[in-house]
Length: 358
Image 1: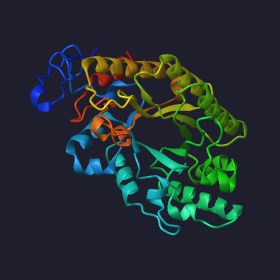
Image 2: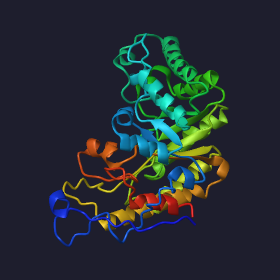
Image 3: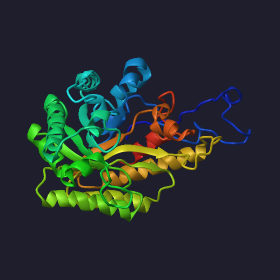
């Protein structure tokens, strides 16, 4: 067993303003085990790929961010650079610079690349929303976009989230421009077109909310199974797993087990664990919260590690450090959802990930 030690941190409590009272525990705490042995890394310690969604601007501007990405992860997803609006802002224009930068960075550093995402209901470029044409024209639009993108990165991108978040909260197909113009078939068409462009790429359906409960989860699983039954080239299912520390372990386990039952590869694709789901503005990240977060990361990793090895595509966190998380901006609240803190130091959650494969 590799050596771990206790990280003892002295905090400047007065200047930081973190505490509301002198007796409130604060993280980091001497009671929490955090690996400081630099030979221990996530990518070296886990039996499956462990990745992160990354931001190009942070890769360029923050050495600490870049260094942690290189050191800790062996699979990378682009947070935004490969989405439709970023790549294809007008009908006859593709802008490749950001996606190329991301793919080049990953290749130069020996990382697997997971493409995110070819078709998504959210934020299509204005030209798509205003597009005029019959079903055949819309079909060509869909095909041309998918195949142009996949062909460019053939042999460089190992896998794609082909369709993202097509299922609504009630388990039915989400209303979107693609459903309106092409009907439910837009989903299977997207997979077929991606497969034609790169037969070697693994193709995933990706969605959030598997762990919320049976309604949306059943809708997702029914969609995926229908694609399998039709012979559509689909190889995996992505569970985003934007979850919270209060989520029941039973629901988390059900999310993973029902995905496994499809027989496809399973990707925990956008993992983060919110610690302030009630939007408390003056909440402090205490040692108690850190311990609960550690336990939740450990449970998710342990459950995932128990599934058949040939179905383990890997686990990806949605960004790297707490300061990078989408949650703070989206909900305008303090939160600490990731395994690294604002300064890219390892948190107790990091140890929880390691403990999940012991």
